[in-house]
Length: 440
Ligand code: ATP
Ligand code: MG
Image 1 (cartoon, rainbow, N blue to C red):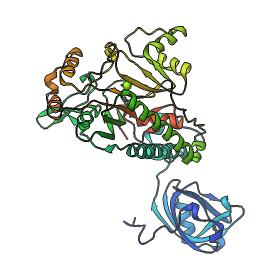
Image 2: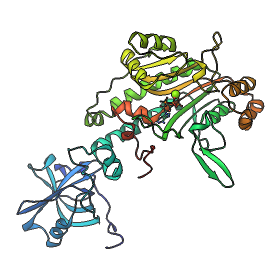
Image 3: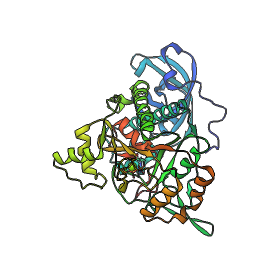
Image 4: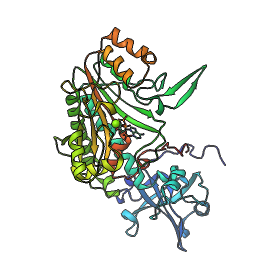
């Protein structure tokens, strides 16, 4: 095997750029091999690249023996480069094919493959995730990740247009942002450290100097759940804004969701078709359902949730059926919101906090945060946390005198689920990490 089969060859055309208009021109195309077929007098295979595919056709009588032998040795999914002449051919897909004069085998795939990325029969999710490098070549996977890419692009455009700046906060941290139970410990030289479960405390501190920030980054949660919407490593889109309240950032979120949905619908029509997903753009304003109303409506529908508890999965699903689409649940009990949440002025049992739901699934949580150190210390103690562990965080409140601020965290993987209609979050993450899966 030569070390560098590619040599001085470079692609002259993507497969979809090869059209009958180029007839009799010489091209170099590169991509992966579909199954090779031998029809007696003619051998052919489909070469696929990121743009689509092109048929490579070798009539035995007119093709060099070395080229024919190379075609015989090809296995499905091998990477090849083909130099050849473009021929208009009615019987070929798109009415065009390439007749090869030289083939370079760049890498030969081993057989049998654990799954056929071109197959119509779906392998089960575990098998697919085990062979993710092949699974990601399926047109459905490609469609999901193109939509995810577009969503992220729209998110950035929107937040930048609102004057937020993008930041990166540390993912190796000394203390929890919420409760220690959900943290992955790591060894940090002679000390213990943790993987960050949220950029919460850092982004709050940044409102004191940068005023409006956002971050797109990983969050790590050491929770043992095994659900279609939880992973142990997820990507969170977080914002935090100075001199505003929960209502103001709710509007930013609402505008953002509408923009992302409509841009995906417009620019990813092809991908949505591949996924057979009909995307409805939610209308503004999204319904606002208070926690109390939610409990009442659930009870009328026969689902009882005791006041002061989070909505368990079946209750969330039921509420999704009752309200539908994108909606906010507001006015949560303080007892189930984190220590940095600002209580409501007129009813301190309730939090200035909201969740954005889509059907039965939580997409985002946010609210007004506490900016006074004394209140924060009081609420830390109420949650059974030790203010001493938060000393360096509390200092920034004294020195930086944090302004009033509010923000939210939106799960990108979950957002991709609702945009693509995927039923499992693992479909929307390249290499998911869950309780059982740490590879590939
Ligand atoms: P849930 O109640 O669904 O477990 P949460 O309330 O613990 O979520 P938050 O801390 O509010 O999650 O995080 C903000 C957002 O980040 C969530 O609304 C969700 O979109 C996303 N997110 C949080 N945890 C996970 C996870 N384990 N896997 C995937 N996404 C997550
Ligand atoms: Mg939440």
